[in-house]
Image (cartoon, rainbow, N blue to C red; front, side, top):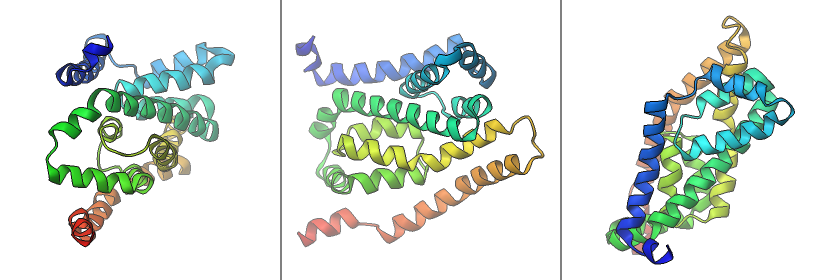
Length: 226
């Protein structure tokens, strides 16, 4: 098995196969709805937090949108506990996807990447924590795709995990708050949660564009300076 994993093509095929299998399972079997998630959590009784965290982690690895389990946690556990459980579950799943991407794809990216891509990778690696934190706080790229994408960069696992944990708190809190107030769409809490998500969606691309313009060419400039 170890010898088989030494093949770059096989590693990339396995990584691609995991992603396709997850997408196919949701397509043919049907993705769980918020009601399904709430029912599963409630049926777990005293083990509900454990079941939720493990389930959220697995769904994250399979690239399932986190808004459904996060909203369900808000409806069942409340805003505070739901946010804590959602952040823990999503972080564990993000770490799992990150390690999977690193195990099956990191060496191959290094091997086939050109010098320019290599410089960008080094630049990201040097700013590991801040680079990941920025990507989480400004969610321009899909969360689940970013988990695998960062796995093939030189970002350290600890930096990735801590930045992911911290960076996902604002967005997760809004999703959980939304789920906890769905039964009363006229409440101030519901309106605030919707407003926060809209603001996050509108401001994120604008901030990202401004930062990119300001830092354009940073990897190349730093290399020439060194």
